[in-house]
Image (cartoon, rainbow, N blue to C red; front, side):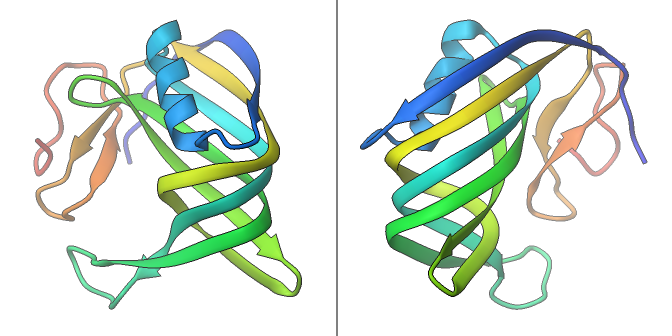
Length: 155
């Protein structure tokens, strides 16, 4: 287990409007406000999007299994934000539902808002947390050390 201790910084409340892309809007906001680490909580609805709902097969590295959602799905979720190679990286998981169908997974590539998404961003300060590629797992993971050298197996 790794950990890093920090403090709460700024708190932002956001509204992402109909037709905007949730992922693009959040990424742009993080860059504008120079947020390097934090946590995001959100709820609302998506018109369409792509969600990874697990691997195609249980293997390392995983091949993601994508599900498409369209036609207005209710969503809520949480995300972590850590600095990547050159910009903040969002790892966002959500549950989405429409009628009797529901999905849970990682929103990726696109997430077009239907009506509105409300979000609360809690910034973390004085925290060593970076998102790095794991050579062992084949995925991006948080490195939570206070020194500048990532743990072995991560680069």
